[in-house]
Length: 351
Image (cartoon, rainbow, N blue to C red; front, side, top):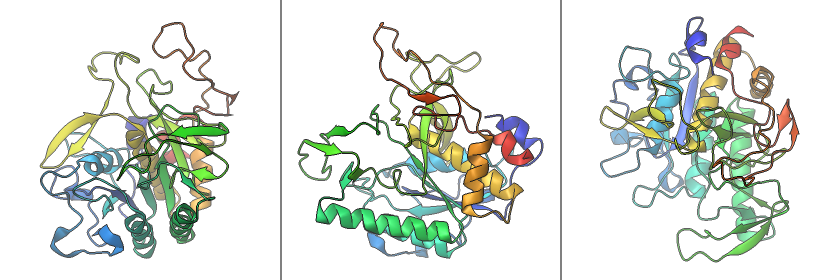
């Protein structure tokens, strides 16, 4: 992403805040503490924002997902651990994942977007889908209500100036095909397999209007084995890591995964579009730092314009067994694997 070269020119502005809608952020971590925005942080569990007792933190036994995301965005450039894509910006924790189950329910997600909008957050990152439905179908009254609620909240945040970035998902699925088999929903009770029509059924928030949808690439710069894709669904691509069985990194790297912060001052590796999305959120934060008066629409336009055009990987045989594993469609400047291309941090601070 050329982030190292970008940092020679700018680390990002401390006036820019990225809100992490996730499982919580440990603001005592040495790589997070220098950049943490307490005023913009809250727990939104149950749809009610709470700031007391550091409610935005993950407690022992809870998911470390949000911490990993936060470090990718804004881990401080302080000679310790890792450095985020935008190590000079602020990061806020909007805790929206249930502690016991890790579920991201609608009321918490809506609260997260609204809180972000009302507290000056410039970029939000959503590395999840809204439970319990992998796809919410507008032909069903209850699921339509969930789509409507999250749409209103995310668009409210965008009207207030926030760029909303979200992960495309890890099911290795073409989200643009006419029909998809969903055999994992509802995921908080007993799943009932169903075939959904993509024109009516959405993965939210990633497929909502205005949201920047991010696919993942591995160490070789091609679509990660697990990453979803889709023409006119994926907007941009970024590093999410992949197994070394599929994409082996160049030495001295030993893992094809993404290294970032974990609670308790620790660090660890993860892979997923969950890891790709915060890379893009960090680039968006750098753009907002460079162009502080830019609207959300203008930041997104610069994000796509600055992306490195990436042609389709054709044929895409990620495991090398002679069978095509996914089909990419589109041209060099916009296609179903990489959208506008690979996110570029250097362009974010120079153009």
